[in-house]
Length: 138
Image 1 (cartoon, rainbow, N blue to C red):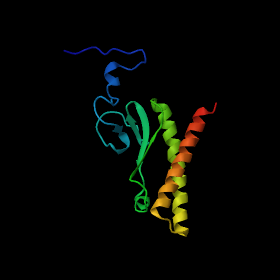
Image 2: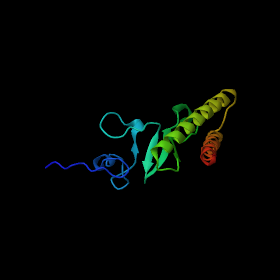
Image 3: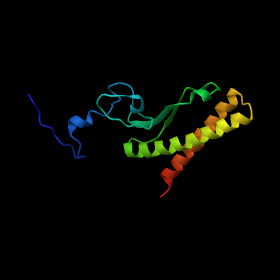
Image 4: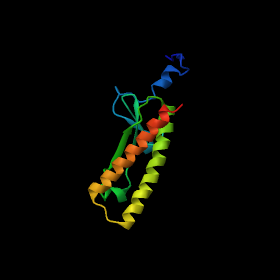
């Protein structure tokens, strides 16, 4: 028996809303690593956990060998895809600039794994503060 689609007040058919990942159905959804198949493809290293989007990406192997953790995961503090996409783009841009600075620093002097880790933490902190500052701006 075929059921008729009902349209919710937000304009999404109720059978389409089920394609978004749910915290009740399992772990997070990361489309940046997903190939093929149906469902949403968010890209931009977006993961949704308990309805909140997070930016998650692997640090480059050269930095991991020098003391960086394997993954960076930062809450984007929103449950709206459009806002998460905008924030993820800003974070990705800030992190790529910071990575280039760190690699240039590593060419001129030797840094310990603790110094590399501290540099990365500060870089991420500045990027998140910039993201939140842009959120508060009119």
